[in-house]
Image (tube, rainbow, N blue to C red; front, side):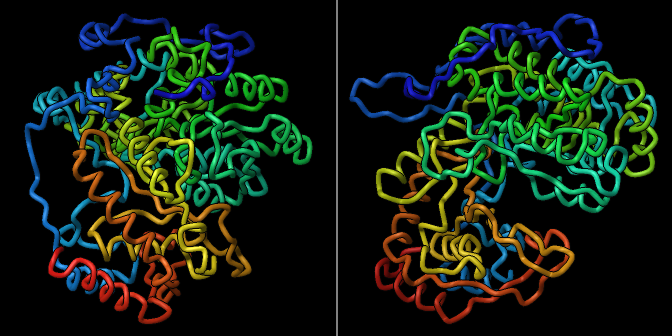
Length: 527
């Protein structure tokens, strides 16, 4: 359970705040799934049952009904594979991976209800009756009038940037995401990251490190002028700094500033499920609110909500929710041009059926807690072994602090990337670099150094077993004991945009061969 020091005072009991001029769509009543979920809504912690023997561990609130066979290839093959991939874990083939902790995007386990719903899909190109199901789910959960489908989250970012961002514009945010920043920059804009100072403190007990600093927000607005700020972006669960949430109280404070200057708020709700869990668990004034009530409170503070359903909804797709008819008409113009017809937006209708059910299931606290509680277990185990990780545990995954893990590797040799390469090599576990390698050079070719060098080990919901998490912890512990063998990487193929997706790197020495030799010395013929 979260310690009392994680609880903060808030004003969450006020579900419908004043000060927003947004017109809300009247509720049309909950769909049939809502009634089924009400038996558990408001009951947190069913997965944290007290054990007689005193051991503490999270419980899976599901059972496995379909499985996929895994294979752990020999370390010699893993060395070949990471070399072929140019030390870029994105370029590894799935057949060479044992435990895939690259991302939670599109790889969360779907429920039996979602799989069943996919069989009801209406394949009509236009006028599909699948669309109203997803539209209604979004309207009922977020209270918004309009829903626009897209093929995934970055499609939302593309469209919103094309419409609202002009050359010279500045978009303040609690922290950037790679594709969000890229789309804004491509439109001639720039970003201003204004999280609270504690956000960049890797070892912390602050419960809401994703909070935006409202004093900094006012400074940015006054420096640039409100007419140069198309919107303020809040990311629910800051991806690049450890999946850290923001509080509902902080969102209300941001809303007050934005109302003062007439600036809309855009909520990136891709990682909303984790943020909802943390608000419920860590924000004292929200303890008696249901997940549905917290969700609506956040939606009421937003002008536009967009999300990747590869994360929120546990399927594959995305969408934009809003109330402004004027903005809806602008967005509508670009959907057929870039995505597809307005009733599918580039998504498979089968996925749309699954998303409609998945969004409703997100209102179940024992569904949304499955990521955070297993992440917390992994973080606690690594901390106990003296391994540097981001704290407090956030959403999305466990984040290794590469700056401290391999503190002898210079930042311009991508320590988080080197750590990811090394971990895959000695374990078959694939993680994702979230550091300088995930940045890109500016117009003058200068490479910015990231605020953090993290190796993210994502834990998609309802996917991994406890034994697999323990295996990963064991191999990370061995690597930490042998960390001096790890050296850096250099680019041999560096794309201009989003280089971390498909760029290739080489080791600066034969350190990988030395790491393999030490592994074989310690483990013999073991994989």
